[in-house]
Length: 148
Image (cartoon, rainbow, N blue to C red; front, side, top):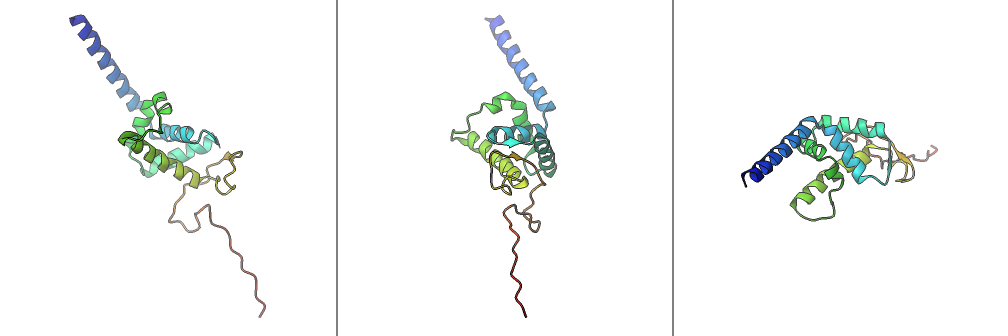
């Protein structure tokens, strides 16, 4: 009985230590890229653009670094996480994912190219709603010249 408890405690301690190491060595950029690849798996994403976007988003600290590193530490468990469930944890994860995905799509040429899923999506620059004419939906308006 004592050997069995010792084995269980040692196994639990090893699992906690491994999770701690994964968390320590994870980065925000890794989790942002993982989120994009998971949620936008049906699109062709430019890998350099994903990397550049992840660096830009992480530098803005718009999303909790702890939460992002936790996603990266989860590794392949995160990729297989069922996002269709409706509970507190699933809803919180989905909300964070949607913030990342929305920001990426607005920062890319996806909407400029007519939401064409067959084209490679390229990161252009970080979308800032306060920047004039930063919207990918903005169209240039030209008025006809009226003769005087």
